[in-house]
Length: 134
Image (cartoon, rainbow, N blue to C red; front, side):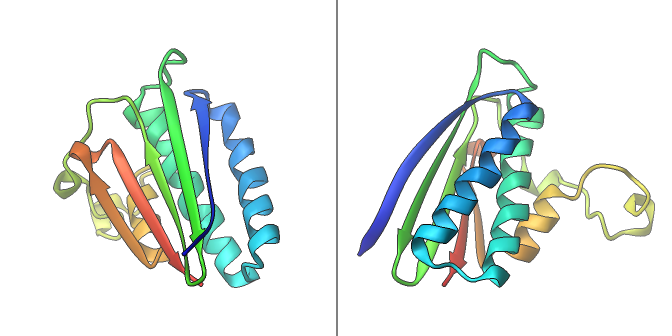
């Protein structure tokens, strides 16, 4: 049973990432989500939205990022959709390999997979679904 579901539409401007923390604060407060889950949700969702803005929409402010979230009794899920061309998840370099350790970027997908209970990429990578068990 869904307890809460809403959408948030952002322009592709990295300054809009501040809205993600406010949204997560609100969701966590209203749904009594633990501090342990809060940190995981904050980092994973910020990475997903940042990737959508920077890599998906190429910071084109005419393109939108649509964030949908749903909270049930045992799970909170976030769907992040961009208007980019997508990507092949299998071509994302592993940031833990020695040749990638010192790179300043390339850890977003790794972090999402490490912090969320389930991560799915759909529509050629233009949609990422993050699920967290409560």
